[in-house]
Image (tube, rainbow, N blue to C red; front, side, top):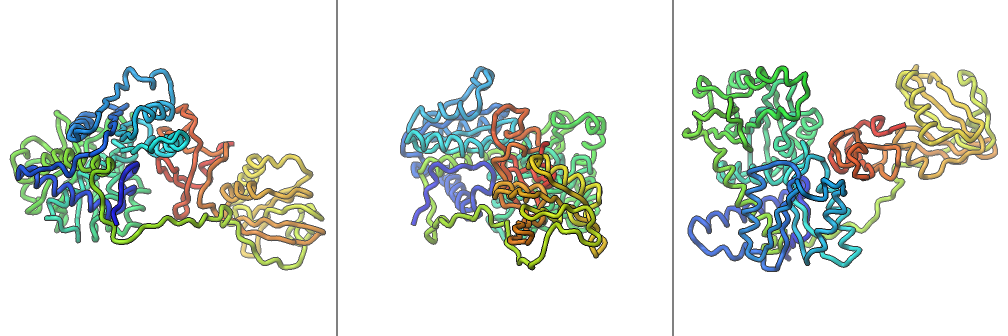
Length: 526
């Protein structure tokens, strides 16, 4: 059975499975070999007419030009280079409206985008896909050419392909040193998932703490089974008995740094810049890579290295063209992947409220005066929210109680709340609501405000139903939530009107668009 890639979106590297990535790399290898041997490459040509839009709202040279030339490889493609400086974006038209209209100008479109805002490709995949469905148009494909400091998946594809070439297409193991601005560099962020094509992965993070890899990416690397080490500088790293044979440099992205970090720029740059006196300490067979551009003044990889065998960045840059030709071939339907089994979509709908867990009811009262629980207003009917923020400080518990009341708008009943000290010495909060029953939507919202809380339904002075609530798998459709990443497409200050949406990964809530992780307390705006 063959797998078709038409209408697929590559917003982040994991949008392609490991098997799909390896297929792309094998096809790229075949295309390069055919081209070098002057063999016919028509099998890679897109057969049907297609519009390929290059929409770069943020400046770029290599990525943009390699995509333009990769698009021109395909003879049936109409290549449209979108001039963002004189576009509707400057008239404050939304991304969705702009791309909806562009989608209607032909049977099938592939969009390559680069934006300052993060999460734009995922937004377009969803909203423009809905537009296409409404009007009976084939859904377009979207390729992320870089969104803010989030991800750069096509750079990751060409990087991984280049690493495989260096390894003779042996993907059993890689040890890689990531060097430079690991805080702002989207190319190194993509490595968190992209390196998973290798079976055993060791990652050495070389950067001063001010520009070190964000902790949530390090945590994700470890969750993916990577062995991770951290170093403050190349000098410290070279004291290792054995270093990596793949070094991946990134430039200091001064334009993304705050003033406090910019003041240290010279010191930071020195820590991640290679010098001649380091040459004899580098492991034999090592290659240096860089996504480019490298600065013309004091580059991390100095020009004296250009003619040495360490130079891997030039072949890496040239590989960008071949990888992107093949990616467009796949999304344009020219080449298909042989699937080893029939893939089926899970049609079972996840229970929207599976995190609201019924608990055993011990027949008794809730809200009746008991020793150590002075101040509870006894209720005959209604709801008691218990175990609020259990184990936290009284100040934190009180803050959570106030937040619950404000967000759920619990102002319309004669209610009570308080803080208790449990038998184990920990504190917990409660809210007692006479003659007031929470809706399922309110309980869902409560679970995101204060997970691990208990909801008791009181009828005729007895607990008739009890629910223990956990953090939901997804939080959306609440006007009080927002992503705190100012560069996210959903952030209100960006004016795109995109509702925030979060998914639960471990104990974190991750923005579905920019993938910024949040604690559950952070997403609420009162």
